[in-house]
Each structure stands twice: as C-alpha cells, then as structure tokens.
Image (cartoon, rainbow, N blue to C red; front, side):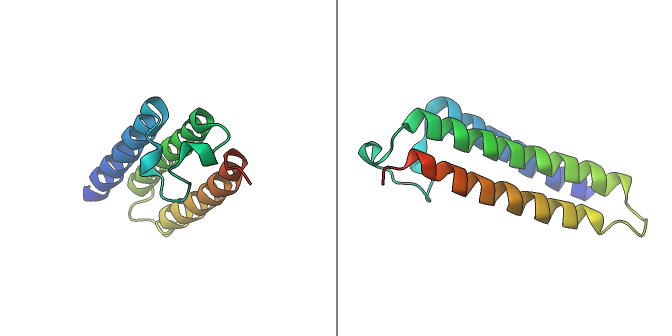
Length: 105
C-alpha cells in the first residue's frame, strides 16, 4: 500500500512542477537549457514544452502506481518498474531533443 502513496506523491510533485514551469515560465528551474532569454528563440514556447513533458512524466508515475496496485503479488509485478523506466527515459530523450529548437545556434 505504501507504493501507491510514493507514486502518487511523486506524480503530484512532478505535475505541480510542470504546471509551475509552464504557467510562470520558470525557466531558471531547467538546468539543461540556457538561463539567458537572449539565447532562446521562444522562452514561452520552451516553458510550455518543458511543462507539458514534466506533467506527462508525473502522469506516468500515477499510471505506475495503479499498475503496482493492480499487479501486486503476481508474476508481472516487475512490469511496473519496466514501464516506469522505459517511458520516463523515452519522454526525457524526446523532451531534450525537441527542446533544442528553442535554443539559438
């Protein structure tokens, strides 16, 4: 039962962070992009892009929590971790590659 709380709290924090970055354009929280707005082509677009992807990762944590409860005690219990890792890695790679379009060359 504790895993549902862990996944839920983590997902809630990520969704809150994503909304904050998107709505408040808190680009200073993104360590992988320049903090200087002069080095960005569209700071508002980057904030929207980053916020949406962080919200998606938060939703992945909620889905993983549901899978953990649904598959608990079965031989497929490991699928929760596999799903979480693969989907988070793929979303992160897509976020990093796609976010480069907002950086001036």
